[in-house]
Image 1: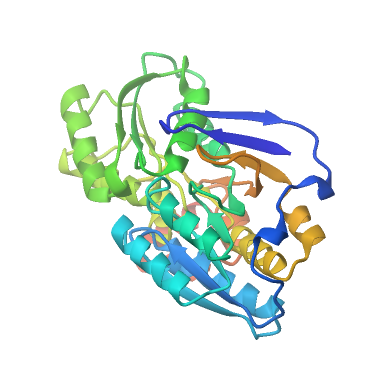
Image 2: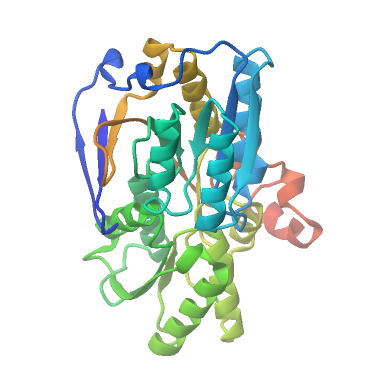
Length: 368
C-alpha cells in the first residue's frame, strides 16, 4: 500500500510504504446511493482545455469502458471547466441537480471545489477524484504516481546534462499552478533528484498552468540569468514547454538547453523528435481512465471486493484520511523511447508524428 499525504500549503508531500492486502481497502460502498445495475449515469468533470489529453484520451477511454462494463446500458455526461472554478462549480451543481449516479472529478481547484464534493456526498452521489486530489469527502482517487513524475523528469534532465553536471549548472523550474495539488508533488519529486546536484537559479509556480504565463516567466529568467547561462529547464508539462521553447527563440537562442515536459502531447513528441524538447513524461491514459471507469462501476454496483482490489493504495488530503486510491506508474519519453511508449500503446501512429517537416529527424532516430 502506498500512502500519500498532501499539505494545505501544497508544498510538501510525505510518503510511506506499508503492506496492504487486497481486502483491506476502507472504501465503504454503503456511503454510495443504493446498489445499481447496468443502467447508471456517470458524470465526468475535466478541468481545462489547454491540455488536449482530456478530450482526446481520458474522457473517450473512460466513456467507452463504462459502456463496455455495463453492456452498453451505462451513460456518461461530460463537461470541461476551461480552467474556471466558477464554471466547474456550476457544472457540478448541474450534475447533482440531474441526479447522476456518480461523479468523476478532475478539479480545477482542489480546495475551492470541496463544498461541491460535500454537496454531492450529502445527495448520496459518490465522487471519485481523478488525476488531482480534490478535498472533501471523496470516495476514491485515481491518479498517476505524481511524485514519480517529478523524479522521472529530473532524472532524465540530469542524464541530458551528463556525468559532468554539478552545482555550477543553473536550472530554471517552471512549475504548475499552486491551486493544483499535483504541482507540489511534481516539484517535490523533482527536487529530491535535483537538490545538491545542480543549482535552482529561478523557480516559478505558473498560474492556471497557462503557457502565456510560462513564456513570461521564462523570458524573465532569461533576462535575469542570461540566455547563455541556463543549463536546463524543468517544465512541469508539455504545453508550458512549448511556450518555453518560444521564449528561447524570441531571445535569439538557437541551441536550446534540455527542457522537460509531461503528458506526451503530439506537439511535444514532435519537439522531442526535432530536439527542441528533451523529454516528456508518458502517462498511460488508457490505464488511468479504465481504472477510474472500473472503480466507478464497481462502486455503483456494490462490488466491494472488486472495488477494494482496484484501490489498494491510500492517500490523505488536507480534509480526509485513508482515501482508497489507485496510483498508476509513468515512463520517460525521449527519442529512444517513443516506440515503446506512445507508439506501442497506439496513442499515435508514426504518420501522426512524422510530418513532412520532420521526416529527416524521424529517420535519424529510426521512426519510419
